[in-house]
Image (cartoon, rainbow over the protein chains, first blue to last red):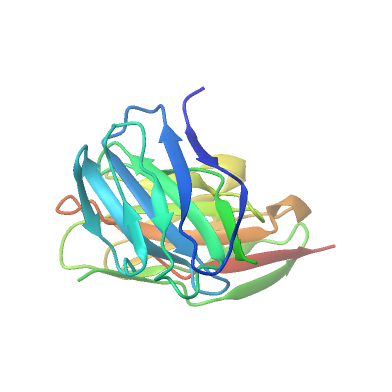
Length: 112
Length: 113
């Protein structure tokens, strides 16, 4: 079955540490996205990528970085510059903006 | 710029009663509209989509929505809810000019026994 796989499901970060969240898709979708979800705030866009080797900042990119070296993969790094990283992170993909997104099951990041 | 407004942050409803979750949007160009459902600690799952054509759209789990261009609305309805429908529901839109999707802040549906 095609889909999006996010790993790990739970992740803990120490102060001053960078952590990387994995997102892999086998849907052959060109576009991939990272969202942050906090209680009562819906989804906020961190970064998105329309094609390989290209990505754009979303609404809350500060303290995050991404890469898109392969069509299937779009990892998100939460850097130590992100002072409040505790949240639920969702990865998504779409074949075009005229079609819905497919979502992974999320990664919950907490601070130790 | 586009926007999506979900007017109700929480909607309590008794089991087997009908429910309507409201979604209004703003856009100067044609839109594509989506409703998603999210269960705790899971990703979003597509309920239904409006791309073009018939304004009444049927989705999974007995849900339907009606696209109303004059009211700029895309309300989600179900004639009889079950306990298992308790979840958070998101309305979203996209346009052909950008790869960005705009989401509402979500409506938490709580079905009471």
